[in-house]
Length: 401
Image 1 (cartoon, rainbow, N blue to C red):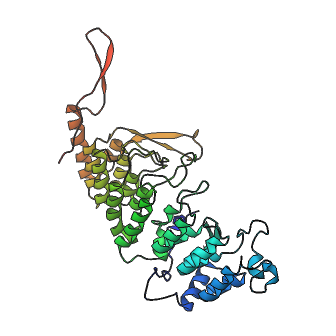
Image 2 (cartoon, rainbow, N blue to C red; image 1 turned 45 degrees about the vertical axis):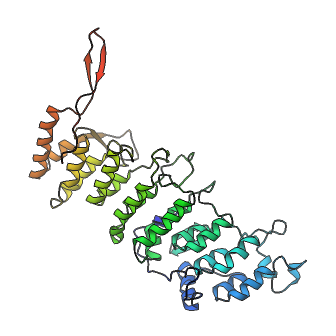
Image 3 (tube, rainbow, N blue to C red; image 1 turned 120 degrees about the vertical axis):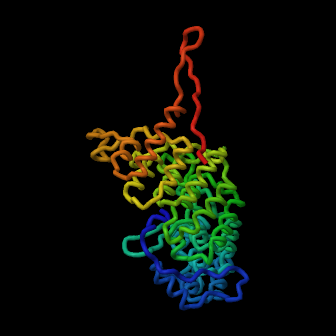
């Protein structure tokens, strides 16, 4: 699960864990209690209680005592802690101690905990509200809160950016819920953590699941293009930064919707223009023919947006047409999206534009038809000298700027 699952929910911000070397020192007990209440954490061991209370020295003593006695179960200070361990493997199965240390920013506890059996990849269920449970690894929480020192410490002790099962913790960085719970001071704070993840092996064009995962999975670019209005000013800087590091040779797991679909849905003209420029320079693959869950290509979706809001400028539609989007590609709509065998209707971006009653949109559609007549957008079959059919590439409409 991902924190972005509840993107539409409104969350009150919580205290951001202090970075290593911060003059503010350990998190205050009142802030710890707010986090405990927020995530509905129930300490069940004396180690958990020590961390929740901010008694870092006591927690260190308990952790260091785990392997310092021949029979820990005879030691009253460690017996409760060891009750959460498998007797043979000494691996944590229940205690959220490492998650708590990450949530509270207790950097000094990370190494002792991971050295004494608490897995950096152990998933623990945290609650964000009624019916909203998320199973997260410590690295998920560290990335969501953008605590770079703890991210580095967890990576140094076995935390995985690309786990063999489940989804990558990298998806938490730009998840709207993460940004709401731990509000950044500015976009550069987010870019700093993003740069850290990319410099430690994550690929900007990679889907958040393994390549053989048979599900549609977004990338960092998808997330950046779909940030909600609250963080709209973050979209363009993040998109530009990701595109600079984007590897076009890397085959990411295909997402159901392209970044272009997301940007069009949010009427973000600058992001759409940036994506189209990246496509023209071959930094991105062609997205104009891709369809979303509603079977809409980007141009059809843009025309729908313009019809729904007559005050919306036609800049996005012009940009798509200049790029070579086809007004006459069919859009198929079924009576029931679940039943593909049900009755279906066909329409095109041109047909709905002409029927919209919006004069500037109708005029743009007619103008494009006249230009398309002079410069066809498709490949045509012609007859060669020997009488056989061959394909010839006809002139293509270029950028009309």
